[in-house]
Image (cartoon, rainbow, N blue to C red; front, side, top):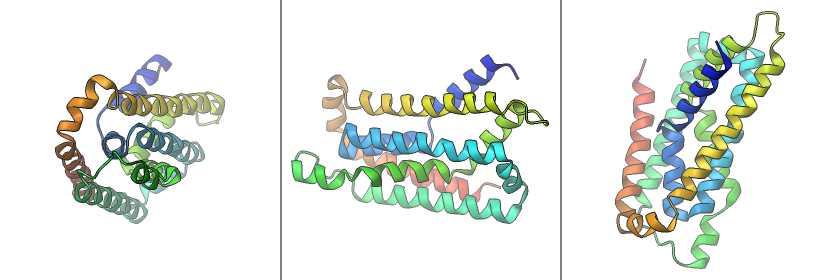
Length: 203
């Protein structure tokens, strides 16, 4: 597969709406720009996990083992449902007090949320396994190129989701979003629950 095609495919995968996008949007709406950025950091850090097992071949083995794959699938689905329920129940919470913002913005927890959301997604796992099967040759000569592509995907995830956090806290959008903040947060919660449910029931 040509590298330009791989680069474009990676870009399309990253910007397509999914659980990662919903999580960053939810955290941004609830706790502000910094919360969204830290979730983005966690998401991009999780890409290193997918790259590692794809290069080592572990991802392929998991995808071929029904029991392990099912365990991963249900674990990821349960976490998305948990995030969705939590987001729905806490929608409309106040953002204006300094003490509330400092308490909510435990940065490592926000980054961990993003990391788990991405790392436990079996669809992301299968994407990276399928892509790296095209990048890495059977004799392993393309490992360096695979690492370059992996670094590109890490950077792409970080830049895109940080951009999402910045855009949704920009001044032109801020006043409009605040008027429908509770509904947007509830929609994000329902979307995460739906992603989790569909992930669990899909064969």
